[in-house]
Image 1 (cartoon, one colour):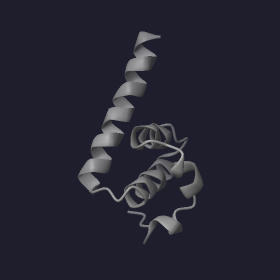
Image 2 (cartoon, rainbow, N blue to C red):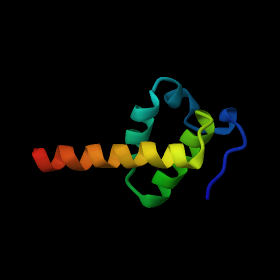
Image 3 (cartoon, rainbow, N blue to C red):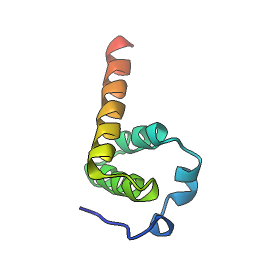
Length: 73
């Protein structure tokens, strides 16, 4: 797992500062590659000081919302 030692180490911290946790999870879920998605999730976990379970729950909700949006379109 990718790990960032503190929020200042997150490369996308300026963008994350403008997002809610849910928006950040959706941003991670829309990543173009799995590797990028994992990196973004690690940033979210560190930046918002979340547990792995909290990050996973946010990510699952974001993925579900994206799938539901595609199905209903």
